[in-house]
Length: 273
Length: 255
Image (cartoon, chains in turn brown, red):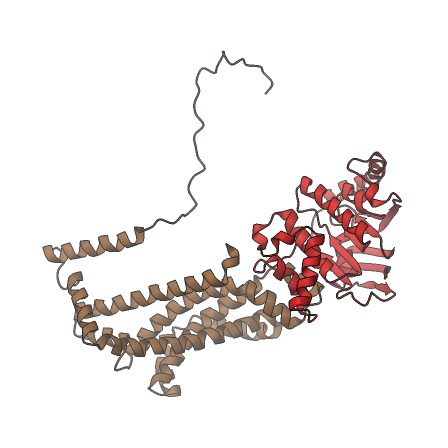
């Protein structure tokens, strides 16, 4: 590249270098998510009013909203919501904390890993709903069998996520802890657990979504009150407005849980920046 | 406290990495281990500090470490090994907590070592906010906090750019001049070895054996950047190592 071209003998065809480095970098776009919802709902509203969506296919969004308001005003909303939330809270807390505990043990002890990983792999693909009759026999028809179902369903994905997260903790940090003579407990508490936290929390996102699915399933199979029971009743009467009002509650519940985990992540994982 | 290596040999499976290494590490001196990549110098360092067990031979501590030494054999790692979720202060207090040093006593030690490594203003910073050179200074501060009898440094400057490396070498020399420490310093960088080493141990390629021990008598604070006398030594080291390094480079990795 040593040929000496003087500036006045400029190249005949100067083409600007084409930019090709963009994309593949997701960034926050405010309001787009809401806009998608609004457009979809407006489309359905228009369709049901104009008649190109039949009343048997989808309810009018405005009617669903009215049903929801009615549910709220009659006080029935909380009559259904509170038992559901308490089932979710008890079951998911039980399952997630057991799952995190067992996952950490699997991550730390070779014997526990050798013994339990195949068992967890065998339990994971079982559709937990199929076991509900069994749970009813084991734990009775009342709340306990529902807690057990939700706990069991959250347990397996939490275990898998947790021991994966423990496995992924930077070994050089553990070596460092050992080289400074830290006790085993200190290494687990101050290095392994915080290091596994990101993986545990992202596993929890999936586990809690599964918990909501199982909550509804459990309530459909035998509960007087609860969102699942409400949806089942609406479904058997083919009351689409109430069915969708119930589904709406579930969606809101899912979004709320996801936001809560997001907040926990923000607090616990602030160091990631 | 001196360290003596007595006929150390070590293998990973079928691969022999170290063969019959005997070496004395005298108190108050910096011993550099140099050698082609894969010659087992980092393995040797892990053996010295008890992070790995040698297949044959022994690592001996001669004499007792000073009473105020919390962790006589202390490492400084190439990748810094700082906990990303703890601040600079927290990373240093981590190694004190297990010795029951907390609160005021810990703060006194931490502010002392931070001052010695010129990090006083960064006590509350998180590792991700620091440059590579500062991260390694934090790791050095953490090592100083436990008052080591021997500092085991595993390529401490290899992850840094060359300017930062120069600066940190000056810092290490200043630290040593202030209070001479014993150190085993593993590096593949001969310039570092001649700047910091009182004794430079050249290892052959795998299986690592000592091929020569070079002593440099010039005081550390009189060794400068591009010192002709040191360049002479460095050239000598390189002639010792060149063929070994070339052969090591052409070997297949099967470890």
